[in-house]
Amino acid sequence: MKVMLIGSGGREHCIAWKVMQNPEVKELYCVPGNGGMSSLGICYTLNTLQDMVQFAKEKEISLTLIGPEAPLAKGVVDLFKTEGLAIVGPNQNAARLESSKVYAKEFMKKYKIPTAQFEVFNRFDSVISYLKSGLNFPLVIKADGLAAGKGVFIVEDEEEARDVVVDLMVGKIFGDAGNQIIIEECLEGEEATIMFLFDGKSYCVLPSSQDHKRIGDSDVGPNTGGMGAYSPAPLITDQILKKIEISIIHPFIEGIQQEKLDYRGVVYLGLMITHHSEVHVLEFNVRLGDPETQVVLPRLKNDWLDLNMALYRSSLSEVKLEVDTQNLLGVVLTSRGYPGNYEIGKKINGLEDFPNEPQGKVLVFHAGTQRRDNQILTAGGRVLNVCAFGDTLKNAAYNAYLAVGKIGFENIYYRKDIGYRAFRREE
Image 1 (cartoon, rainbow, N blue to C red):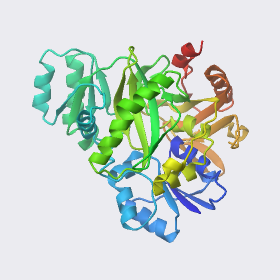
Image 2: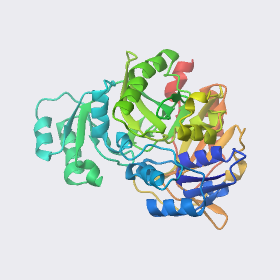
Image 3: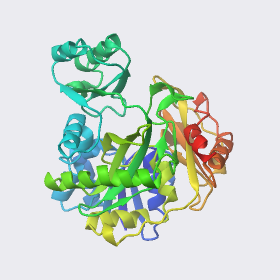
């Protein structure tokens, strides 16, 4: 069996690692891949979706998997299906649940999925008038389109809100993503993630997780793509999970079916659990999260390729999910300066200690790396994900940071407190 995997981050390295545990996989093609993925499969750079289609035909790919959101938003699933090629993921229309925050919020409102109250604007003057109408701060401002996880701003007053709106709608810091914006109430509580598999008829909930988005310890500083994560999330109790299924997953599926959306793949729910244990959706993503994938997939005893074939064939109802009871915690190692300016091309030391055995207690997934002259060099802001198992989350964190201490590169930076919120619940 030949598999193509589109993407180049830590999420994709984890997917590749999981896929290659299937003995039927003879060849894995990573597009474009990274330094870690190059040891699992063959990395290719393909510039357009049409190039990917042609490549899949030439290599006789059995199944294509998608890591990031951009190809889904551009319609890669539609194109592959038109050409009779097997691929897993929502089509372009369904991918609007992530590529357009306005569409997602209106979908939630229509199908009574709990979310923050919101207003939508497509004119600068209208927003400015709204900001002067005596609002209660803080508020959340979101760019409508894709912004690599950086299009959400929490503003504390009218002046700060105006500055963000100017940047989005006038300065176009995210291009057309800021043509429309959302202003919504700022919910208070704690965030968590639930991802589930959905084949158009049936669904299967993956283990819960929680990530740390802020750059600094104690959750201070600007948002990032994610500085670390752990699974399971103690915040998601059985009672909360039942509430999520009834008030969010069930109406979500009803909405998908009512709107006749072609959706087979992963659904990511970014959730806010309030202090009164009420659950609200902050965002939908139409693919696996990063860095949540790196602490969720290794806990699955199921074969990941088998699960994706069940999605493709709409036979998920025949699958029983099996999950390792151990905790898994991951720390993201970054280039100092991220999420702003940073340097690349720094040699990474210590990786030889972590061979990523399928049953290994420590796993290192590459994100922004490249292989050059048999050396692994930094090639991005988020460089590595160091993940470790433990009987408790505290034990998993201890093991992860022990491993982090064995890895080094110039200008390395990482948070020292991944999991701190969960530790209080373990005591």
